[in-house]
Length: 107
Image: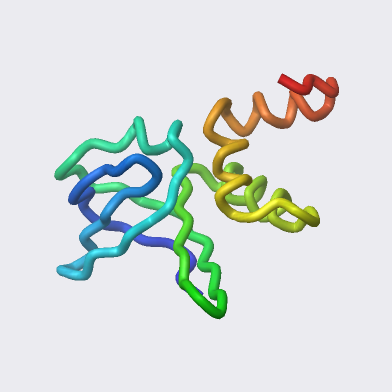
């Protein structure tokens, strides 16, 4: 499993970034909130979660350890996959998401 990556942002896409780690390009799925913080040609450290399926291998990335931990909890819920969990994390900070769950704020 790939636990983290440190590399240079090659490009930012709609739902992912391409990260150059010593000449190897990693496609990393991320929340739109995290993607908006990335800058081309800047070095970044990402916590990563690797998902291996029969038809694909996905690498999800996070700028904060707390967001990584929240993602792991979300995908542990039946019916929530990686893309749905990243979508849920896109709209707010990890702290905001936790507060929304605690107050039962469905927005």
